[in-house]
Image (cartoon, rainbow, N blue to C red; front, top):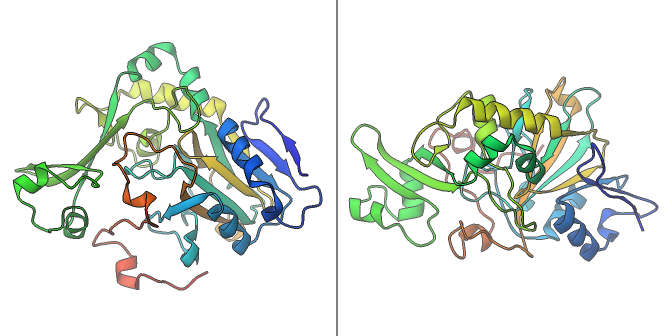
Length: 332
């Protein structure tokens, strides 16, 4: 049996340390699921997880997975949807994975193959604790509100979701049931796609409100105050964003990676980020983003969403590098 250390002050995750197991795949799946449902963040240390074990372990819990199409991620085991993290060096603000899209994964797995000697620590924050600790006026203001994610379209996206590259107004007004967007046509900007989510939401396995969306990443990494916006189309007030960031910073913990570690995060509850990377060659982190085989899907999703029926790869923008390199670049 591994040593299990439950969350404590300054440690929001469960630490599971090997005590003689030859492989992480020997651990009891039911026990892991119980810990995951209760606490939302599990760090497995001392198991020496390699690429094959990482993918196999993640797929034990997931019915399907999704490719994060952000440029800069390299395939390590493309058949298993195991990729590296973003290749940049900058610090990342707290965010749930792919919260900018309506198919936000249930779970995010991160695996360390090469641990950085300095910098490059993964940061995590419990979104339930963040919502609970917000200044009361900000929490009260957020509770009844929703966020609008408004983005442009391109022909391949329209064809994927609507079955045509030139939809009529009637087709835009009545997308198919499995489509996660609604669409609007405007004289000056053309067609835009939109989806909406609560500003504070209920995670999958805990009956409390949580903060977990794209606001902090958009504001503090992209410098944008217009994505997402509030349900009335107005920008989220800067004072709210600063209060959310300050609360998140206070509650954030850093993961000090060792080679072979694996982190399993409830992406409906926890946010993650990273500190600035000193040397990218000294930091190799694997990722897998999936949909649990024991999931309780959000009522915000389309019923029987495609990402819960098959491994999902969103349609790529026409300027995406992979469209010019081929869809199956060589593994690293």
